[in-house]
Amino acid sequence: MAKRKIAVLVMAYGTPHTLDEVEAYYTHIRRGRKPSEEALADLVARYEAIGGCSPLFARTLQQVKALEDQLNQQDQDIQYTAYLGMKHISPFIEEAVEQMAQDGIKEAVGLVLTPHYSTMSVGSYLERAQESCQAHGIKLHAIHDWYRLKEFIDTLALRLQNTLIQLNTVPITQQRVLFSAHSLPKRILDMRDPYPQQLKETCELVAQRTSLPVWSFAWQSAGKSGEEWLGPDLLTMLDQLAAEGVKGVVSCPIGFVSDHLEILYDLDIEAKQHANQLGITWLRTPSLNADSQLITGLANMIMNRIKEG
Ligand code: FEC
Image 1 (spheres, helix red, strand yellow):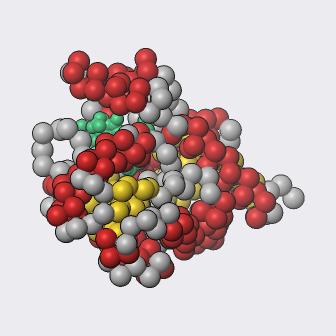
Image 2 (cartoon, rainbow, N blue to C red):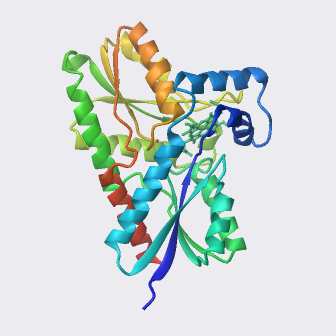
Image 3 (tube, rainbow, N blue to C red):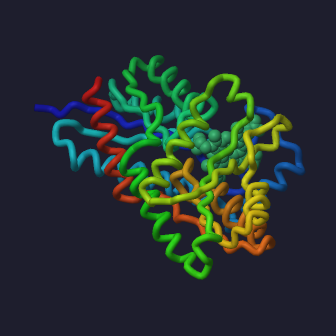
């Protein structure tokens, strides 16, 4: 008997493949408005500082492949094909769905590679996916969030424990774990957006799992759109921690699952430099990328979503 065919539409932010693509990418992020020359030069300089381009695309491809393999190994009744659709660069979400339709797909699961739901992040990915799938007569089972997924929390906790061990030159009372996530415009609070609460829950779960008595949270990578963004900002938080006598920080970014610009520049260069100037030793938990435990958890979640129908 032929196996049931299901697509997994894996959605991710996307990154320019070369420096020549930065302008078009940035313009897409700004919903069609070209950035100023100064803003563009600033962004190009950040990519240059991390080696010329971001590892995000390569990391995302590894995650997509690992997820497809894991699903096909675990579930013998269904033939899974994973498609990558990106938010800000080709292959865009719409192109991935177009490909799915050409391949005869009638049913798909939509997963965004960021664990916490916000109308401005996951919401907009899913809206585009839903619209395209509807246009092609594909039934989409959307996953809205997965910030409590056991394997996600366990993998983060393990990385945090291992990084804390490396901070052993700093007395325990002067150490602080600093969780962070991408900031968003403050107006999301008026929409009762679940994003801040979901992030808080992830921090609490990881803290429980690692028996952390005290921890801090800050928002990172706020955009330069002119409006007010969620705070406290990470650099301001570092000033505050220095004033409290903290001498060693373990940065644990909980809203991202891959290495990319906002990790390799905003945390590893900008925040680290700021911390060091304040006399604080700065370490960061390694990114999850295609960690096998995380991929297994995501695969189980997808299979359960299909069972739920
Ligand atoms: O490695 C790379 O090349 C890509 C890194 C990258 C990730 C990422 C994730 C998120 N963003 C989110 C929201 C916004 C909002 C704006 C915005 C702007 C930028 C710019 C760059 C950029 N983002 Fe991003 N984001 C990444 C990169 N992001 C570059 C433009 C320059 C700058 O501001 O630094 C503001 C748009 C506007 O101006 O109107 C809002 C959210 C996430 C995490 C969830 C997700 O992955 O979707 C939310 C990775």
